[in-house]
Length: 181
Image 1 (tube, rainbow, N blue to C red):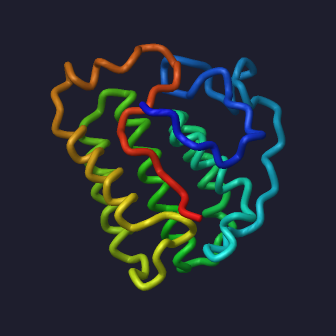
Image 2: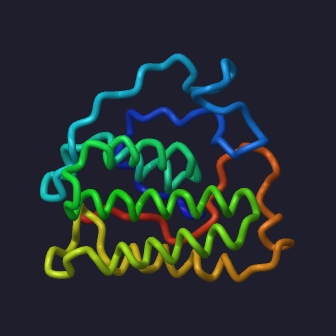
């Protein structure tokens, strides 16, 4: 993958990305990279002021670097504090689904990739098109990531097996998520 702009430059990437059965669970296993760490307190994401949410930007950086499980966890923390039914909560769920599709790709599960990509597409349709970009993300950019997952979901098991069997982070789709100024 091409070098992508970092949005949270102070973020230190974990030593591995969590893939079930390949590395210690980050939170539950004493050998996990986040074991014993208190969850970070987060403020709700405000789409108009996304620049102020370092947590949101961390999720983008983790996703773009192939840390799908970790991006999912970060975005889920924001989703939990989002106003129920808000556009921000919908966007965060969409991003969680994209991260989950990345996890399924690393696990070699095409059906899981397809399921999460389809749900992400449904959620994209719920976002207001008149508010473009939304939380710094363009509809077209999100659409490209969803489309890349849809293509990946049609690949053979052998093609999906190209990703390393280790917990080394690997980007499984291009393009990256790009925040617009």
